[in-house]
Structure formats: C-alpha cells, structure tokens
Figure 1: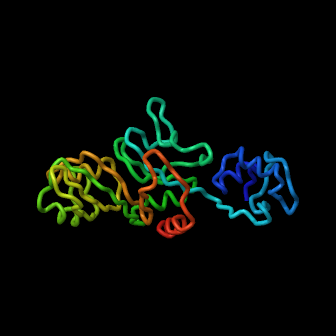
Figure 2: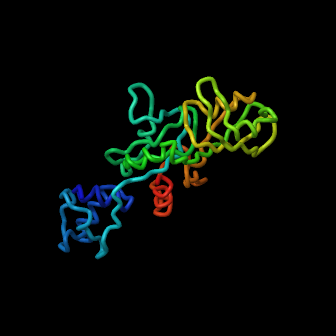
Length: 238
C-alpha cells in the first residue's frame, strides 16, 4: 500500500482541510502503529493509522460528484478556458483525479470524477451499458413518433444510436423531456432531437448509472460520494 503524508491522508478520509488535520495530530489524537505522533508531514501507511483509537476507514480510490455549470470544459486543463478541475476544492483534490467521460461546454449536471482509472474505463465501455439520464428543454415539441424512433435507435449521418428511452415531463411553449441512453457521443442528445424535428435549448444530466444528481448540490459544487453511492457505482462497472 502506498505511503502518503499524514495530514493529506486525514484530510482526504475525514473531509477536512490539511490545516485542521495537522491540528488533530498536534492534539495527540492520531497514532501510527499504536504510537502517538505529532508530525503531520511524515509519510505513513494508511492501514497503520488510528484516530481517537479507531482505525481510519481508508478508501484507496476517490470518487467525486460534481454539478457541472455551463461554460466550463470537461477537461483536466485548458490554456484558454476554465475547466471542471478548477471547481474542485483544494481539500478534495487528489493526484490522478479525472472526469469520467465528458459533458459539452454548455451542458450542466452530474459529472463523476475519480482517480480510479479502471472503473472509469469500465463505466465508459459500451459493453457495460451504463445508463445516463438527461433532462432536455426544447424549443418546440418533437415529432409524434419521437418516442418510437428513440426506442428503435435513431440513425444519424455517421452512426446509428443505441435504443434510448424518451419521456415527456412537461408540456408548454418550451417542453421538457427526459432522455435515458447508454452512449455519450459528441452532441448526441442534441443531434437525436434534431432528427425528430426539435432543438435543445438547455441540457442537464441528472443521472449516471446508479447516481442521481441531488437537489442539494448547487451548480459548480462537488462532494465525495457516500459509501452507499460508491458501492453501487463499483457494482455498476462490473
């Protein structure tokens, strides 16, 4: 198991700042191999650390959920434009953290970030058929046969989409539809609606596999997945 700085380990596992982690060490609440320590910069093996007499619930990989706002790129870095990585708080940042898949610049909603490269690959693999759910605001209602065409797989100019589910959520001048699909090609949802006679004016991803975007997570914010969410995500990638 890799060794890491004690304050970094405590900050990651306890969702606190490194400054607060260092204070806990100085207060004598942390032991390594059963011995009380006071140097928060020392490198330790996570399995050897206890806090207030209890072992750390160490998590080898890190999983974050972000509510991506419009106007930022789903990329690790860009020389000219802001990226989603710039929205990750320092206390949640970890080496190797990357977005899983991508959302278009103007698309909002649920974005998963992790340093678990194997799981990211599995979640994006077509053979695992992980469903993604979107809410699409339209400029006008699509054609009457839209639901059937989505279900059979819409033929676009360069590929045929896998079968998808379409459900009307709200009528009106700007109707709202829910779309569930297992792909994520460039502008795919927008192109699918264009093929059935409508145009997407706003798009938000509300679900990724077993994960749902909570109402309490504001745009631009992110948080660690709960234990239950993490376990469900790991199962969905198998």
